[in-house]
Length: 96
Image 1 (cartoon, rainbow, N blue to C red):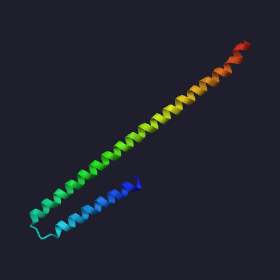
Image 2 (cartoon, rainbow, N blue to C red; image 1 turned 90 degrees about the vertical axis):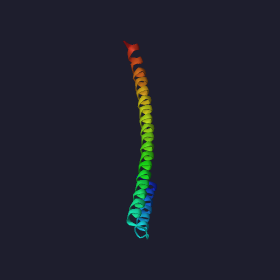
Image 3 (cartoon, rainbow, N blue to C red; image 1 turned 135 degrees about the vertical axis):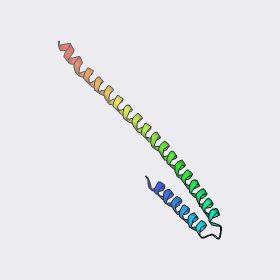
Image 4 (tube, rainbow, N blue to C red; image 1 turned 120 degrees about the vertical axis):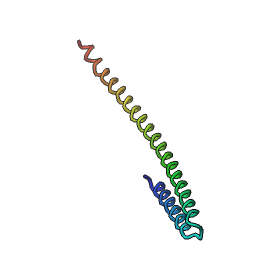
């Protein structure tokens, strides 16, 4: 996790904790308080799921980029190796 993600997670946790405390100390009935707290926690869970899905998409895109770069470099190195081998074989073939 990068620093921005850690800050965002900490911020969401702080907001959730503040909302929970605010709801618990509010002068509402217990059932209303529980319902509001339940709704707030569901919203937090949805937010976390959305953020996790975004991060997974970012990591998948990064992985694909790295794999493509590795394949490109490997193919380039292979072509250079074959070219060098052919250049080395040409003088030997002429001598035979």
